[in-house]
Amino acid sequence: MKRLLPHILYNGNDMKLSDLFEQLTYGELSSVFMGGVDNIGIEPDKYNQIIPHVNLGLIELYKRFPLRTEEVIIKLYDQIQVYYLEWKYAQTNTESTEPIKYIDDSIYQPFNSNVLKIDSVHDEDGQELFLNDTNEYWSVHTPSYNSILIPYPDSENSLSVLYRAGPKKIEITNLDPTTQDVDIPPGLLEPLLFYIAGRVFSNLNSDGKVEGNTYTQKFEQAIKQIELSGLYKRDNTSNLKLPKQGWV
Image (cartoon, rainbow, N blue to C red; front, side, top):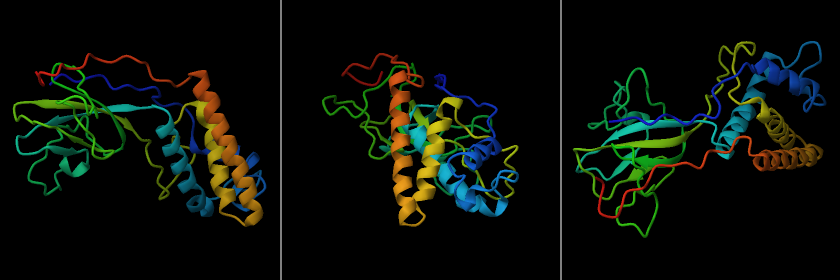
């Protein structure tokens, strides 16, 4: 079927993890031991304490802003009403024992289960279907964040699902901060620093919790300012929805 172009507000930059670490060492984490020292920075034995906060911060930013939207093609089957956007249902997953693999991906565009939220569903002509509309008989529904319920599936058809995708997880094993990308645009660096600091201080003693709350408030304030600026606001365009009469 015809693929829709993925909506990408962010497609990579030159920010490395070492740049983020430097900001933390000289800034938000300069007063705590895991922030490292000026001439050394955050040392490898502290990675397991810092990286989980970095990953959670990235996920939070990708939840707040539509930084990346990806597409997956679902092959419909008469006997299946609920379709899960999970790796085990992908055709490229040769290790899966699922009898029906309805995610029509390829080695060039493999599905990787990085779903945060389903944004829209389209038919083979690119027309957007009603989504979670209780007033529409033919509406598609999302029982969970990564599944769609099709009221009357037809094995002759496929659907395109556009979903908000999450960031790439930073793995601690064999980590080299100088080559590891941090998948956010420069405009979101400050709230990421605030988020990390908020979590770090909140996990310290009682005095740290106060400072942690302060950084969390700074994070929310920074998010509001970015939202008001419209810097990463998704375009409001969409395809026409199908009429009540049916799918095609």
